[in-house]
Length: 155
Image 1: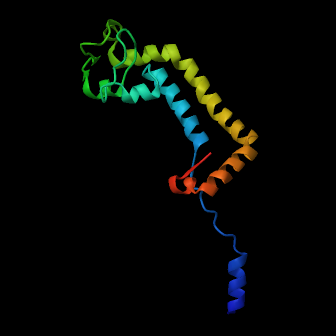
Image 2: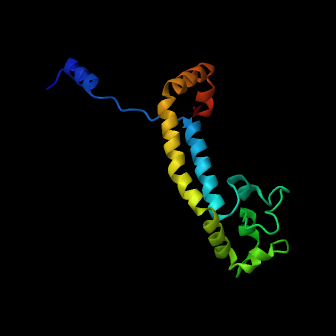
Image 3: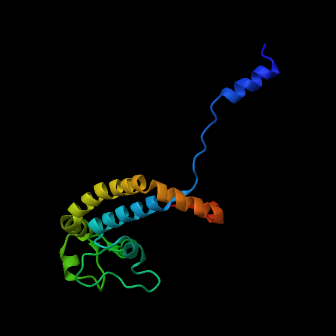
């Protein structure tokens, strides 16, 4: 039977479990935004923000003659042939609905999206690696203000 001293020594000898950092990296958020913007550009024909905001709260829909699709259009104006509304362009209506528009956008922007999917995460990793010292200094300064602890953000 182990003595109390032996139990205490065994407990100290065990490796402590590493705690997961619960803060969100701003560099990772920016990388995700760049990748998502590229994906929405290649599929919906608009950027990330216009895709989600167009048609809501009085903001304008994609322009007549464009191949832009907004989330508002996908939710409120679909029909059997795809999208058809009074303001939709003849280019839009002439395509084979949503699938045709996505296909045209993919043909136009797909190569750029694939490049962005490869380059953006690699660039973020390189920035993190090369700027590690400066990033750590900035995070230490932020820690002194106690802001990152309250909102869960780091650089």
